[in-house]
Image (cartoon, rainbow, N blue to C red; front, top):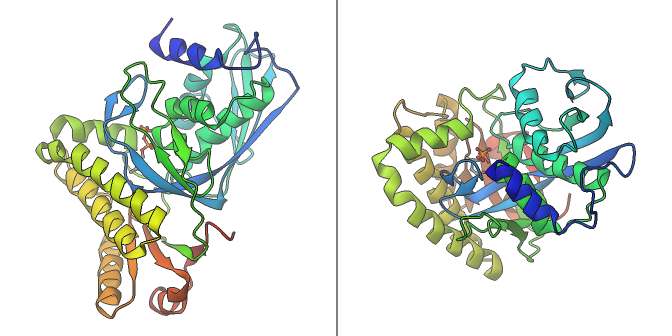
Length: 337
Ligand code: DP6
């Protein structure tokens, strides 16, 4: 058995089922939100088990995410549909999903039909792989009636995509880096704070597919970027500061740490070889706009992931000022939507 298969089997010993890969109904469904990291995950210490070099904290965006339906089929291969479009088996997304599903087959000729509906553009730096694998694991949990809890589901989603470990939860979530090399303590859990005034604005610079996957990008960074040495320590410190800022509702501290953390991650990307620059000219223009607004006393910060789009962080009272500066952007209120 591969290390991944062993890991899955270990998690599934917690399942309510003795035959965990036997369908208990004809179709399983799952639904999960995308999440945006406030302190980022960038770099793995174990590629096979998808163990991160640092912990991270995120906020989920309800209303944006993935819904997945899954069933067993009599066929020679999986049938993967994305937003109702059948994908050729050699499509990168279909291949990645099938490889993940290899860990959940009752036998070599057990195949799945998977239909994935995304309400976010796939791979545009809006973390559709996060909601995708979280929804897929929820759908499997439903199909096979495992009855796993949030932590256990998070462990399984992590194998599909690290950030997916955080998409099992609404609101703020914390992904523990974990210490054990068996990977069983590297899961996410919800942070139990509701912050109704918390807003996120999406500045969509470009929604085209990103040129380089996070998986490949972070590996290149770990392998070639000298600055990266400083990253895990800063990231873990930032994570602690953000958790504290959430618990004390200190928005200024949260925003400052999140923006600094995102720019530090991008600094390691830029200092990778070959360079990883997800920014476009309009991304930088939007950053300057944020900094100008801050100079005028408006509390607004941004974060960015593996793409050119900015995610603005602000409190409800700043909505009019944000709308005036950025026009008709999509605003999400994670605790109200
Ligand atoms: C920049 O979770 O997509 O969004 O584990 O290889 O699938 P894999 O990577 P992924 O990386 C996300 C990177 C990020 C930061 C974050 O979400 O924490």
